[in-house]
Image (tube, rainbow, N blue to C red; front, side, top):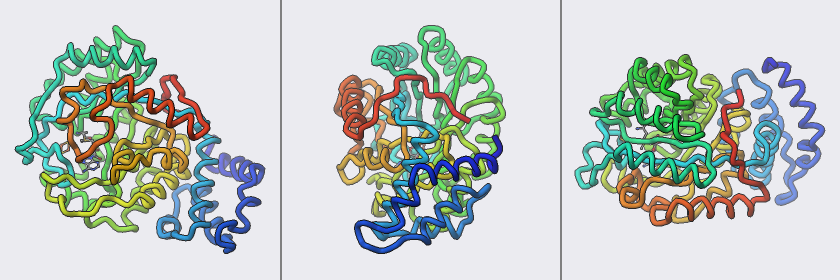
Length: 379
Ligand code: SAM
Ligand code: FES
């Protein structure tokens, strides 16, 4: 179905499901909100949402307007990805990194961090734990290692696909097209590579020695090679503006990604951004809601960073704002605390099974259910 046909159908569905009716008047403040409702309908219907419209939504602070936004996103979420919440078991297999991302605790200048890389056997044992928990996706994540042996990772992927009925998502940074191709041929299904910010100038400031063009090249290669491809941003980065966040939403729309994440920045003491404030919760939730409205079929995580911000677990808020994925941590316990991309990360002390159980309870409390299927891309 073309986006325009979809627009007509979905516009009708929205009338049917009562969005207009429930939000003609704001029950909390008594203020009527027709302007924001019109803006949301325009964003929903547009081939490419207008940046000024996106900024209007990102600047909204009125309770009634926010209710309208989150309700709209929640209805789109239900319509396009349903009530199930998908689980992805993450295995952080190495914290070694060649990069100096200004916000990231794994950056190579952090000499206080004890570095590790799991052996293939340790990765396979962790995968077995994911499999036994009934979870059908593993995410293999690492820093961007100079010395990562692409053939070693290819063999690990092959072995996992041979032994377990799980989808494999890789998240190991920028690599050559040939390496991406070899891993795809070994059976990797998906790849996550966040753009972090779609503003090339800001990207350059935050990622010394890296290139925005190469990151976009990687995303293009991944999609062309047939990976279900995910991207995303960080909210609250130093120098980021509402305009650049609106640009991120446009970037997600343009990229037509299978997975998109909007997650708050959390300052790490061993980084140049140590003294910067953390990303704002409300702004992150607004980004999740807009992402859902624009990238409707994308799988959107309630990120672990949202579970760790200010020591509170805000993931249920994200699930109510359009998210449909949770990522329990299956990194073996002795290594887990060394994958410190930001401090006070949630679930560092819990074992993997307890972590998955905790997610079952969280999801049940939202009135939804855990979906134990693979949760492939829906595009
Ligand atoms: N090397 C891989 C890559 O570049 O895609 C993946 C590893 S990286 C640690 C995974 C994600 O952690 C990044 O995409 C980034 O958004 C997130 N991250 C890094 N530092 C963070 C921070 N201080 N607060 C929140 N998220 C952070
Ligand atoms: Fe390399 Fe963060 S700087 S993973």
